[in-house]
Amino acid sequence: VGETNLPALVAADASALYARNVLDFLKLVLPKDKGFTVDMEDDIVAACLMTQGGDVKRK
Image (cartoon, rainbow, N blue to C red; front, side):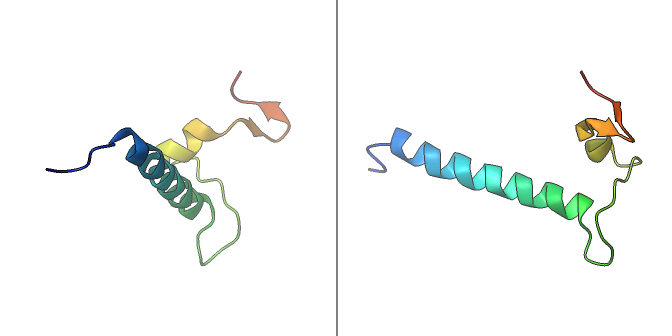
């Protein structure tokens, strides 16, 4: 009863989860009503910011 090869299903689920995460992140930095924005008030966006104004924020 059930799937006999569960490891074969993991790659597809992982790929779908990664794609969804990338899409949700892009929605944060590319809102529909304006162009590319970096909202430093958003914890996720601020934590992902690597450089700003020529300065390296993360090493």
